Each structure stands twice: as structure tokens, then as C-alpha cells.
Length: 452
Length: 143
Ligand code: HEM
Ligand code: HEM
Ligand SMILES: [Fe+2]
Image 1: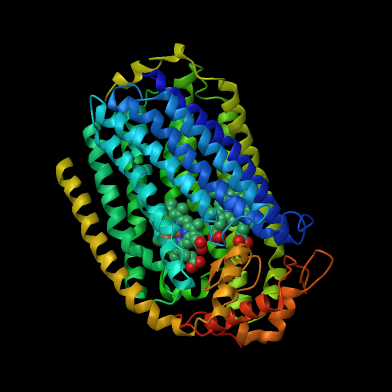
Image 2: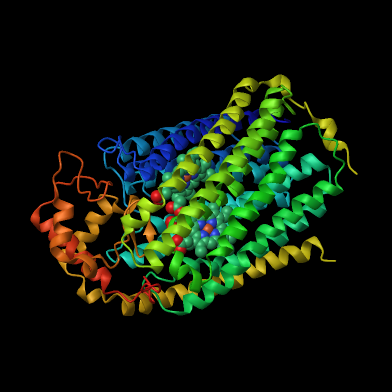
């Protein structure tokens, strides 16, 4: 850590850890409900649990991104954050809006719009909060000594993500229009601007962890985010196939979304080749491991599992089944969940001065979380294939299929348990680091100076 | 090999080009496409009431409609054809000591809809069922 104000990141990471814990609890509620144990139904019905699970996911990831930006931008721009007070105000308002939103879901204050269930009045507060965040980051960057490509890509990704929240706030009577613009948020986030954020954070981590020349890393970065938008913007069409829009989206969505895995493959090759090229001297093995796994598991979850059902001929049968949930879990986890974990693993020793670089709990966290999540993705996929055969292809009742695939949810619960133990270990390490402090300033500089 | 500057131009140029194509297609879809696929003329007051209730109660948190939503409860795009209006009304108005409608072990939320609201939901499902969804949901292929 080079600047005192980078410590702000700690609070956002802490919020992330708290929210993922809650998210997992609601995941279990839904997993058990699928298995037939819905004892909480009267108080927390499935739709409450599902809105809570999905929004906590989005918020903990975004909180992780914000923490990453507060850590990275001062370091890249070579100056303190313009205002730590305002950054902390932004943190507390984010946390408060989050609490109100989650509480609201339990009393029916929501909108039935998957991933965007936060009601409109609160949307305005979210938007104001995000604008504040982006201004703090942007002004810091502009006033800084340097404006690196890494910092720009990250900042532009964050700003575009904020901007893209707005189309999701328009109300339409026609459900087809509502859906059309909801994807401008959800798809253009995860398969568009969030990949800029991902690319920016990965580039930063690779520069720090491998010692490879910035120019080489940033060239790759531009290529990858170039591929992202080349495929991902028109790839939005893969959500439009069957929602009351013209047929040209079948062709365009099919062709361009099939190219989307290239950007994720790019991330994989990028991270692996930079690691090979690098000096391998950085002692923070955990951060290196999470960084590489992000690049690999995102390709499996987003790239391969995405490709598996993205052609309209396939999607016609799998659309809206548990196949989608399989992909949704491994993609979110591999690309964005692990990314936040990688950033936290890198930043915590820097901010606290405690060198938890390579301990048992840390490696257990890594393996259990990933093995658990892959098991979950397999269980969802098996359930989904069963559902497609029984319900869609053989035309049996929904509940006939649902009852037949219950055993897969038992496997899901086992995977989820393994995953949760992994996450618990990660959080134990997080707590062990203690609070950030100024003695940690310039702790690890010597490793950055090493280049190949 | 490519230089960093060329890579940057590839990124900015590609983004601009594909964003413009996307906005053009979206304009066509929003102004013509959706109108011709969803017959908005048939969106009566009852349909809009149903659509509002669908949103307000987060039905999508359990069900899918047009394949969008959660996977805990049945796909409802063609529910009007499949079950008819009376069945739908029974389901959404069913009282079961707080457990709600549930035929085969899985329960819906118990709602206090008025007759008018239930009719609105029925009208909404009928309207959705008549949309042109490019062949979704596909008819079963295994006999
Ligand atoms: C990190 C990147 C990605 C994330 C986080 C992600 C996440 C998700 C989620 C959560 C859904 C469910 C959306 C809903 O029904 O509301 C979804 C759907 C889908 N994704 Fe992805 N995805 C990613 C990348 C990709 C890629 C690269 C492809 C294609 C190659 C892809 C193809 C699809 C398709 C076709 C669907 C629609 C499934 C259906 O019809 O029900 N995804 N994705
Ligand atoms: C260990 C705990 C978890 C369990 C038991 C769990 C279980 C579930 C269940 C049962 C659903 C609902 C599927 C349906 O609609 O019927 C769901 C949805 C979802 N969960 Fe999880 N989950 C867990 C953790 C996670 C994590 C860590 C992530 C992200 C990194 C995640 C991302 C999602 C997403 C994106 C959806 C929506 C998927 C879709 O509709 O396609 N979950 N989860
Ligand atoms: Fe998508």
C-alpha cells in the first residue's frame, strides 16, 4: 500500500464478506425448497429468498468492485483519494440502502424484475450513490500524476456500469419492452462493461504479481476488452430470441454471442502467459492462485457453459430451465466472485501489514470454494437436463419433472456445503488480518521492482 | 505484432461500430418489432392490471414467463391455453391457511386478490399467450 486513503477499500471488502454470507443462507433456503423442504414458506417464500439471493449477489460483487477501485486508483494515479470522508459517506449510504432493500424484499417492497428487484424510489438512491462513487474515482484519476490504461479501463467500466443502470429504471406497460430494456442492464453488465472492470482489475493484479512490463499487459487488456464489445453488445440478442421481438435477433444473437467466449478465453491465455513470463517471486501465493483461477473458471462458467445453450436451436429447449441456473452460478462465481476474492487476497496484506500469504486456511478456502461451486454447477446441470427431457421434450407436467429431479438437489446441497466451508475459511483469514493501518505503508514495494 | 496503440484503436473502433449497429436494431425493435409481435392494441385495462400485479408480487421470483424468471414453479407463457381461466383464478385466489395453492407438494404464496384482480391476471396471461414468441415454447417432440 502506497497511500493512506487506499484503506477505504477495507470497508467495502468487509461488506462484501458479510453479504456473501447472507446470500449463501438464502441459497440454502431455495436449495432445500427445491428438495421439498419449504418449512419457511409462510415467512420467507421462495420469491423473497430468490430476490434476496440475487440482489445480495449483485451488491457484494459491486461492493468488491468499489473496494478494488478505491485501492487501485490512488496507486495507479499516484496520489491520495480526493476525499476519504466522502468515500466513507458513500460506503455507509451504500450499506444502508442495501439493508433497506433487503428488508423491503421481506415485506413485498420490490419489483418483479429478475436481478433488478430493488423498487424505483430506492433505485434513485442507488444511482446517486454510484454517481458519487464514480466522481470520487474520476476526479482522483484526473488529478493524479498518471492516467494509466489500466486505471482508465477500470474507471470507464465502472462509469458505464453506472450509466447502464438507468435503462432498467424505465417503466413499460408492455412486458416485452420491460424485458428488452432489463437486458440492457443485466446482459450489458455481465457480458459487457463488467468485463472491462474485470480486465482492469486482472491487469492491475498481474502487473503487481508477475512483474511483467505494463506495456505488454495493457496491450492484452485492450485486445480482450475489444473482443468483449465486438461480441457482447450484439450478443445481447441471445436474451431476445423468445421475448416478442423480430427474428433477426435469432441470427444476430446466435452468431455474436457464440463469439463471446473468445474474450474469456483471452483472459485465460492472458493471465497464464503473463504468469509464465513473470518472475514468480511475489510471495503472495494466495493472490496468485485466485487471480489465475478467475481467469480459468470464468472461461469454464461463462465461456463454455454459456456457449452450451446460446444457439437459438438449443436455447429454444433449454431457455428458462435449471440449465440456465448451472451456467449462472459458475459464470458469476468464476468471473466476478473469484475476482473479488483475488483482489481481497492481494490487498489485505498490503493494507494491514500482516503477511498471510500462503497459509492452510487460505488454500483450503480456495479448493473447497471452487470444488463446491463446480459440484453445484454439475448438480444444476443434471437437474436441468432432466427437466428439459421430461418437461420440454416429453411434454409432462412441470411438477412431474420437478419431483423427478429432486435427488440432484441433494447433490446441490452437498456442493453448497463444501462451497460454504471454503468461503468460511476465506472469511476467517479475512478477520485474522485485522484492521488496516498506516504502518503497512510501502510494505511490499520491493516485489514490484523485480521484473523479469 | 500488434502495438498497444493498435490494440486500443481496435477496442474503441469496434465498440463504437457495434454499439451503433445495436442501437439501430434496438430502435427498429422498439418502434416496429415489439408492436408487431405483441399486439399492444389488445392491452386492455385488465391486461395492464394483471401486468402490474405480476410485477408488484414478484411472481417472476418463482415462475418463468417467456422463459424469464426463476425455476421453482411452472412456465406460464401458455398457461391460459393449458389450464383455462377458471383454473388460473382458483390458483391465485386459493386459501389454505397461509400456505397457498399447491397441488403436488409445492406451495404458492397465498394472495388476497379481489375478483377483479384475478380477472386481470387471467387477461394478462391470455394476452401473453397470444404473443408471437418465435416458436417458444416448442411443442414436445417425444411421444
Ligand atoms: C461472466 C459472464 C457471465 C455471467 C455472469 C452470466 C450469467 C448469466 C445469468 C445469471 C443468466 C440468467 C439470466 C436470466 O435468466 O435472468 C444467464 C443467461 C444466459 N447466458 Fe450468461 N453469463 C455470462 C456469460 C455468458 C456467455 C459468454 C454466454 C455465451 C457464450 C452466455 C450465454 C447465456 C445464455 C444463452 C443465457 C440464457 C439462458 C436462458 O435462455 O434461459 N452467458 N447468464
Ligand atoms: C452455497 C450456496 C448456494 C446455493 C445453495 C444456491 C442455490 C440457488 C438456487 C436454489 C437458486 C434458484 C434457482 C431457481 O430459480 O429455482 C439460485 C439462484 C441463483 N444463484 Fe445461487 N446458490 C448458492 C450460492 C450462489 C453464489 C455464490 C452465487 C454467485 C457467485 C450464486 C448465484 C446465483 C444466481 C446468478 C442465481 C440465478 C440463476 C438463474 O436464475 O439462472 N449463488 N441459487
Ligand atoms: Fe447474456
